Image (cartoon, rainbow, N blue to C red; front, side, top):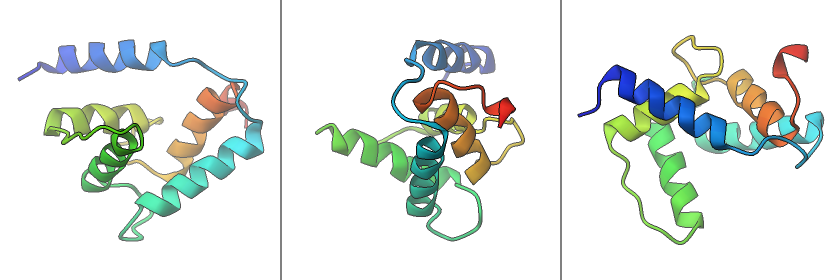
Length: 111
């Protein structure tokens, strides 16, 4: 089992390897975020839960032609990356901020 520091190091290294920007504009990024949120907020709670994130991860690997059954550590790490404002919840605003940063290459704090 990984320590909290190891998980934090993994999150930081993963997030820093993702190419940033140039895929779409701000509104396009928001649209992608809204579509993802609507697809994975299965219970309509206004946030994406750990179990919903597990489904999201499985679908992403399935789309790449691979099977994947994430562990709790995998899900926790992905949850922490997606929780953009670090409030312990993954909301539409978190997904929009991530999409703006990584798809539009803009600072989400400016919007």
